[in-house]
Length: 356
Image (spheres, rainbow, N blue to C red):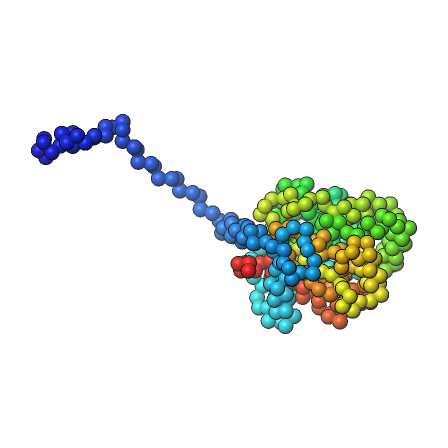
């Protein structure tokens, strides 16, 4: 190049070695995520989208305590497919987990509690079992039993818990980070997460509470002398107040919640005991309920939930061949209701379609 055309001769600054910006080194290759980790990421994105879209549905006959994502139609879609025996194969992911069932307050009063539910999942080849807790114990104490079960599980756990059992599970997870690590999801069915007017009624009428507890023992005479029901007032106080959180339970974000709530109403055909219990709870709270828990008190804000109309508190867990089921429940004319619902719930929580 002629000297007259050199950049320096033309007044163009030529960057020296110290002025040149070094070319950035390529970022190190990130370790490839396992298939399980990728599924976890996808699940978190799905649930975050659900939380972002969470709204209070004006069509609901109740108002949740915080914005939540109404997936009732999704669960009912699976429920109908199961009832009509056209649901097809269970999602492959469902076989990777252990399903632990937890009973509610005084669960031992009802023979074969969660029996039809567990047998259905076992028939489908899923790993399912019932975890025994103190039927009248406090959530703090029962939670320790459940957390230990989660820690020792050889698979990550999906909890399916009824009534107070849902409180027990969440309390156990809140107090045990290791149990949280081995938990995929929690399905609280008709759980008084924010308390229940039934417990408030028991606090106001202790002699009626004692009578009710004796009656609960008489329902299953073999359990009459198994547990003393008269010294469990702290449990009643705990049920009255709920778990104490106002939003999402204080556990790891990756744990997903799928609450199922229900109610009976003036249009529901109920038996006398259901009418009495649901009427008492409504008198105290002013809200419709399933005989024990109001749907408002069972929804986890920011998470998907499903609402069942004309479903009593024992319809979701009881043996349909038992006379107690027909007296205390509502769906006695549907012999497979509890089992079908449980299968539908498992299909629902592994239904990864984008929330709409």
